[in-house]
Length: 410
Image (cartoon, rainbow, N blue to C red; front, side, top):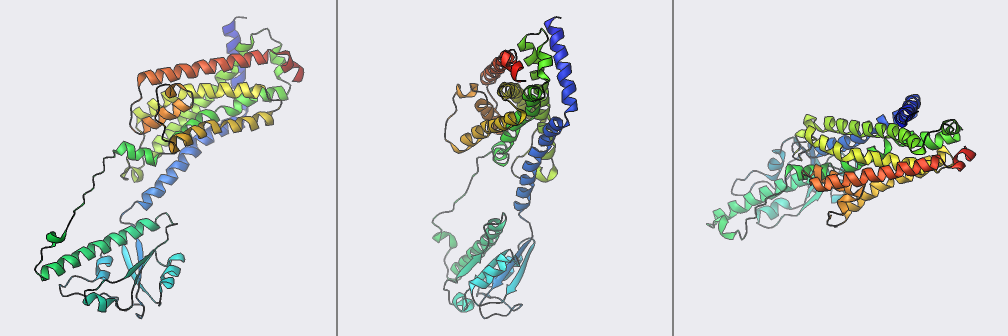
C-alpha cells in the first residue's frame, strides 16, 4: 500500500466518522451562526440608539405648576418662542408636564420609565427669566440605559440652541452685535474614515473569526484522537503498517476541513448580516465586502490548519475524551487573550510580531477590518510560519500515535 493510498483511506475513514458524529457538525455550524448573530444584534441595538429621530418622552416639572398647565419660562421681550415650544419642536418628541415639588419626583418618573428624560425648572423661573437672571434647570436621565445619555444630549443641545437665541436677541435689543461678545467659535472636524468607524463597531468580529478557526474542528480533533483511544478503536487502526504521520495527517485533514468550513460560514453569515439596510444606514461604515471577506479567509485558513494540528497534539496526550475537551477549552483563551491584549495595550506592532501565529493573525484581521491593506511580506511570512508550526504538530502527533503506550492504554 502506497502512502498516498493509505492517506486517502484514512481521510475517507475520518470523513465517515465525522458525518456520523452529529455533535461535531452541529457545534461547528452553530458557532458560525451564533457568533455573527450576537455581533449583528449589538449593531442593531447601536442602530436604534443612534437614530436621531427616535421617539423621546420628555417630562417637564416646575414646582407649583399643576400637570397640564403652562410651564415657564414664558416669553421675553424679543418674542422668542418659549423653551417648551422649542423642545416640543424636536422630531418625535412628546412633552409631558409632571406634578411635584422637587427633583426626586422627576427622578422617580425616569426610573419608572414614565418618561425618558425629565427637565426640572426652579419655582420662580418666569420672574428670574424676565429679570434677566439665570434660570436653574436640572436635566434628569438614566445613563445606565443604552439610550439615556443620547436622549439627554438631544435635550441639552436644544436648550443650548434656545439659550443662544435668547442671548443674541437680548444683545440686539441693547444695540450690541452678538459677534462682538463671541470670543471663540469652535468648529469640529472628524478625520476618521468610514473604515475606522467600522472597526470600532466591529470590534468583536476579529475575536469571532479567530474563535471560528479554533472551534470548528475541535470536536473532530478530540474524537479522532482521545475519543478513539477511549473507545478502544484506535488500536485497530494502529495495527496497520502505516507511518504515524500518515495516520495523523489523515485525521488532521478532516478536522481542518471542518474548521475551514466554519471560518467560511462565519465570514458568509457576517457579510450577510452586515449588509442589512438598517446597518448600512448607520454612519459607521459597517459592512463586509466580498473582496475583504476573501482577504480575511486567506489570512484565517492557515490559522485553521494550525489550530486543529495543535488541538490533535494536545488531545492525543489526554487519557479520555473529557480530559481532552477540558484542556482544549482552556486553549480557546489563546485567541481571546491576543484580542484583549491588543485592544487595551499601546504596543506598536513590529514585523516580527506579524510572524507569530494567532498574535499576527489578530493584527492582520484587525488591520483589514480597519481598511488597512496587509503587507505581502507579513502575510506570506505569517502563513509560512503558521503552516510550518502546523506540520510540526502533525508530525509530533504521528510520533505519539506510534508510541507503544498509546496501544497499551487504549
